[in-house]
Image 1 (cartoon, rainbow, N blue to C red):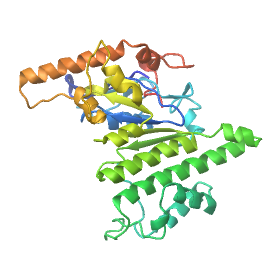
Image 2: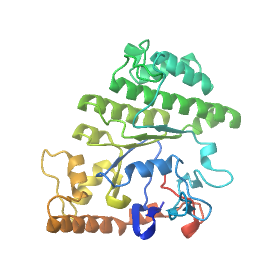
Image 3: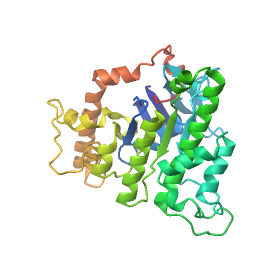
Image 4: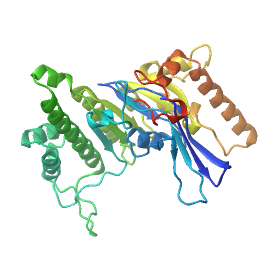
Length: 350
């Protein structure tokens, strides 16, 4: 909620705004796609949601040495109305969180099945969990193939890029499921109570980058299936998604430069919103809606000052229009948590 992140280098005249009042919501059982041009703060947002970047108690993060001013990060990350990373009893201690990096790392000399078995053993799972996740993620054909890669100074041939990304999703799904099962078994007394505790958060930072269109489409399909089957919140940053991928998104967070929100809501309603009377941006027939939306909030810095100024004015108008909506106001409010102004914990709402 209302996430602000500013980097200072030397003095305030050289500051750079990474995230500017970024607010949004991800719901259980749904896939939230994060779209935006380069420099819109997508990866920074995921870093904050994952708890890898947190504010100090006074909302400031110390810089290195006296030559650097402090970096400011303020806002709130909540889960079900509770602080997710901050406070004496953050929700992240009870809610499983999985993070899929852009370049997942594995032991090159282990097979796919051995990698998942190791992951299951570390999180209290068993062979049945491994078999189930292999089936769900479509990894049966390569289950006994070496993962490959370079983890010991020597390149080992292994699975393809698409299979590697599916393995990363499988590992995080397995980790989430086993961690959730252990916590539920400890806290709940009945099977119904254990069922109600199902959930968690999966964050995927550009899981389709570097893949061909078909492989990318299958990765997003698996993420959407995981959200529904595990009843968890799945948030994925997507780079240049094709129209088939866009149709698989349940919700959409569209970011402009500086992490400003241009839209956050059901993906199927995005084009209708931008075609409304206030904005009147209509997506051409047979045009990729994802490309259309990203182009709307992109600024072309190579077409001269006049064109750049016109783009900046358009993006400002789009972001200002969203900021005036009831949805934007609702996303900025921290449910069940007392607002702490500039001293509140940082983040967006998973």
